[in-house]
Amino acid sequence: MTTLITNGTVVTATDMTRADVLVDGERIQAIGEGLAGWVKGSGADGSVSADTVIDATGRYVMPGGIDVHTHMELPFGGTFASDDFATGTAAAAWGGTTTIVDFAVQSHGESLAQGLDAWLEKAGPKSHIDYGLHLIVREINDRILREMDTMIDRGVPSFKLFMAYPGVFMLDDASIFRAMSRTADNGGLIMLHAENGGAIDVLVQRYLAEGKTAPVNHGLTRPSSMEGEATHRAIALAELAGVPVYIVHLSSREALTAVREGRDRGVPAYAETCPQYLYLSLDDLARPGFEGAKFVCSPPLRPADHQADLWRGLVTDDLQVVSTDHCPFDYKEQKILGKDDFSAIPNGLPGVEDRYTLLWDGGVAAGHISPTRFVELIATAPARMFGLYPRKGTLAPGADADIVVFNPDAERTLSAGTHHMRVDYSCYEGRKVRGLPEVVMQRGNVLVKDGKFHGQQGAGRFLERSRFGPGTA
Ligand code: URP
Ligand code: ZN
Ligand code: ZN
Image 1 (cartoon, rainbow, N blue to C red):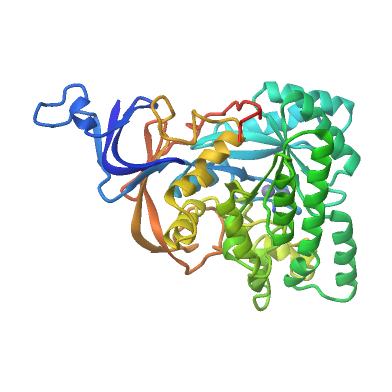
Image 2: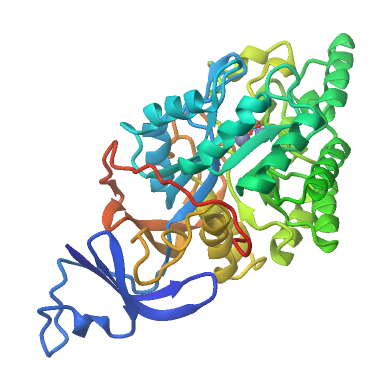
């Protein structure tokens, strides 16, 4: 089965060129000008006999997106994230994302292998797109440290640790430092949820005792100074252990400053931000009535003036990745659990479907970043950082044919009425955006074309990822 994508502008993290892309089976065979004449069986007059020809005139041809931070079916806040691997990965594909890296969770008292196996069982029969897994580690002891090595051998070289959510996920500094010291030997990567959970918990109890129960108090009790403090601490611990560290869902100026200062003194500190921190703000959390609950996530949305700093961080490469932290909960059925107590609102936002277009619209179309930087943030850097490159994350001969044909001129309105995520609201309801992933392909198979979904449940493959190494990022 061959597919020829003609007349488009091919964009990678380094180049933008008018070129054709020839796909043979699951891989890209060639990229170049005038490939039509090279396809076996093509006529001397330029007629093409690839099995399928896709005309990409006026379109960008870019790598499928890689979202390295999703939570399908996450058990959290007394309920489960509303997208499972079937609905969530279909929505991802609709939005131009062809690979996710989701978080398997170690349950208290259980092994890492049990957590990993449980997630493989959930994802395998359902996923429409290729997927890797990280592990959320909830306790550290000698056995778990040894098991981290085994997980890396099974293709899971990244571990998320929490400095927040005391009693649920939070680890103390000694545990974090022990885990980091282990990755100095085994080549794993520690990812940190960096908020000072202890101080935040005191504030939460104080606010509730004062009768402050509305959603906006979620943001007010998790100040950006406490994200900055934890980010600084995480980087200092990594520096002491002599390992790289990756800060997840960075939301604030203070946290970005901690990353930049660490990088400036030579620490291999990396960080991602998410569209919600670039486009939404504390004002959304403060919407009237209970509507702010739709925007409850941690770290919380910040005052709007943090956004310019985050955009600058994306330009200067102090932020290397844009992921979503996709963790949807229905407004009517699930967010409502915190009607009288903001701390009981399940934390998390939907976003896996919107990332590609939102970053294009607010980033490229608005003039913040170039198309090549867009590709780097949305696909290439995540692939490099998380052991998927060069099989994924770029367009090159031999790479998986995970391809998006993107129409930059299509205008549309984001809405829960038209999105495919299994959640009853959109954080971006009514927002007009420019850009549409018109054709989405994984390993040569069309997932989305002509406004129709052609994917198949269970067709996504588990990706064994390689470990983080020198020169990886
Ligand atoms: O609010 C969030 N971010 N929910 C998902 C869990 C996490 O901390 O990433
Ligand atoms: Zn987190
Ligand atoms: Zn998350």
